[in-house]
Amino acid sequence: MLTLLIVVFVVAYAAIAFEHPLKVNKTATALLAAGLLWTIYATGSSDAKLVSQELGESLMSTAQIVFFLMGAMAIVEVIDAHNGFEVLTSRVKTSSLSRLMWLVGVVTFFLSAVLDNLTTAIVMVSLMKKLLDKREDRLFFAGAIVIAANAGGAWSPIGDVTTTMLWIGGQITAMEIIKGVFLASLVSLLVPLAAMSLVLRGREVQAPLQSDGGEGVVTTPFERKLMFFLGIGILMAVPVFKGLTHLPPFMGILLGLGVLWLVGDLIHKDKDDEAKSHLTLVSALTRIDMSAVLFFVGILLAVATLEHTHILSSLANWLDHTVGRLDAIVIIIGLVSAVVDNVPLVAASMGMYSLEQYPPDSFLWEFLAYCAGTGGSILIIGSAAGVAAMGLEKIDFVWYFKKISGWALLGYLAGAAVYIAEFQLLH
View 1: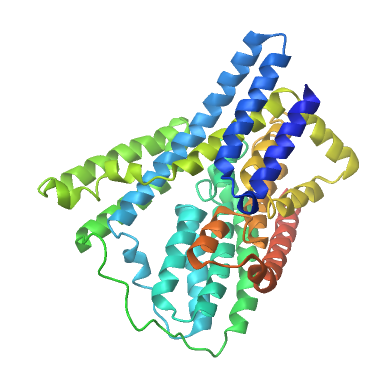
View 2: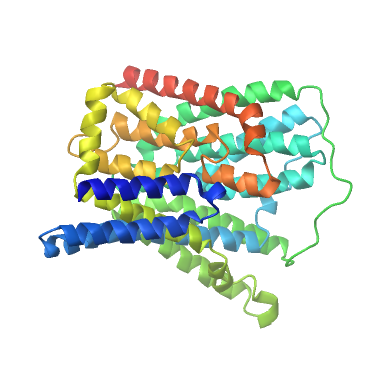
């Protein structure tokens, strides 16, 4: 049974990694893998009651992550529907490409910590289309945005799906991950940003001749500012809510979603149904990427079978004996996340090592959050932010590898060295 479980999981993992050449959506593969793995486990086990109990536990932990993600995605959709991100993007103005590179990188870094790296990448790459006319410039900036978004998401409990998984799972706490990983994440951005801005030094911004503005739903400045600051405030308040109440983060995000829904209904109550149809939270819920949500459900449930059958703990023991050094193991995991999706990679790592052996906020979990978050920048397909940028600007895999991957790898290794040195000094 164990051999069959491993074979099915490896085949599914390969199909997810090669989603684009195979032209099979990774969500379909993840759901199929979850169903097959649990079916094999159930039919091969002699204790049906135990399997049902383990499935219930896995479903409960998976549901917490899914509810949190759905709530956060809905809040971002409401802000976007009100053109709320114009509050931020309208202030990005400069005539120097090098200075714009620094400005965009820093804004993306901090914005992705508050929103998430995927949403931030979409917002910032879309902004570049309004600011830059030359496609080559936009591609270069898209590469910098991917690096900055992943670096910014790694040190925030709500900035990256993998960091959120570790936070909800109890492997890290909000303040400790911010304090522990911020400097390393910043270095992983500053190193490639400094090099890339030097390439652009002396060049001027060439703006598009025609603006893309004026399309879509028109909202007032008050509505844009209110929904932007309220939405961002709710997302930032979730870690505080968890710290005060000790309730799971998804309860905080659902509470905030209710507040945002109420405020939205009140400010649009005098408008006719057609005028406010695109602005309501009901409409925002229909625009959530349910394919991404179902992917998380499928992959987390699939990995859970390997955890319950002790396959992951056996893998951890093998790595300990073969590689030996924990820091080297985590760095390797980060490099692998550039090739395969970091969500199942982190989910597998959570199952490989127990909280009894490695308590919350220990070296393993914080370093894993950094490596899994920033390692995905090395290749364009290694992160959700990269895939989003790839789709928006039609970035070629080989172009990114030649122009961006080297800088991203340099930043990744520099940040890893900083984290290891910082941890040894402070602990």
